[in-house]
Amino acid sequence: MNVIIPIAGVFSAEDVGKIRSHLDNCADWQDGNATAGGQARQVKQNQQLPLDSKLAQQLGDIILNTLSQHPTFISAGLPLRLFPPMFNRYRSGETYGLHVDNAIRYVPGNPNPIRTDLSATLFLCDPQEYEGGELVIEDNYGAQRVKLNAGDLVLYPSTSLHSVTPVTSGARTCAVFWLQSMVRNNQQRETLFELDQSVQALTSELGAHHDEVVRLSGIYHNLIRQWADT
Image (cartoon, rainbow, N blue to C red; front, side, top):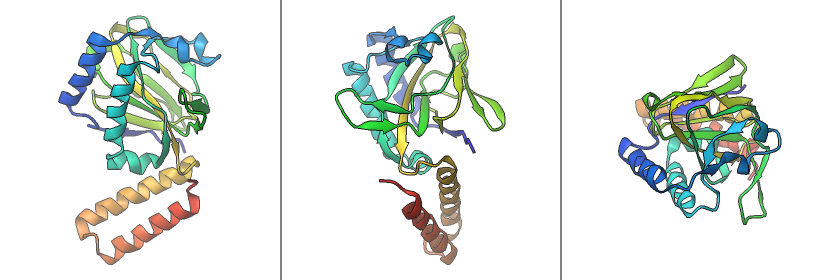
């Protein structure tokens, strides 16, 4: 399975506005090919903040701090390690052709590799701000086109072929990053996510101490013990 998980409202409109204010007025945008691999370099046309940019680091910390407290993101990703968010912008005519993300990434200044199990895109523009620019993800059901509201995030397996269609007007600004999950296997991780969502729904309906809620919670945690690599 290659499940695409949209998570709505990770950031409020006010919070997105603050991030965008910095990116629109203070950012030192550079050629996005600086961080592209050999294959991706041939199909990548966008701008990007340098990884060592102080602004990118400050905004990235804000995003990661928020996500570290977001229950749906934690449930869906079971993150072990996170690559700091990279900020990119696509203007008219810019695109990112079909590619697969690098399997291993290194945080600058850190010798420990991050295995990219899941890719994430946090949308920082509303759909009406630009034409084109859809994130297209190939999964078992064909090509899925994703264009979410500002403040929404989408998680998808890093093994997926994906692209960004050409922007034809306006500008598309996003933050992208990768995570290494405690559970490497996509199908196992997706099963755990579905089970946790069921536990949460039953908890709301029956209460945390109901026998079925306790039983299913035990199954969930025992599966994590069996499958997790920490």
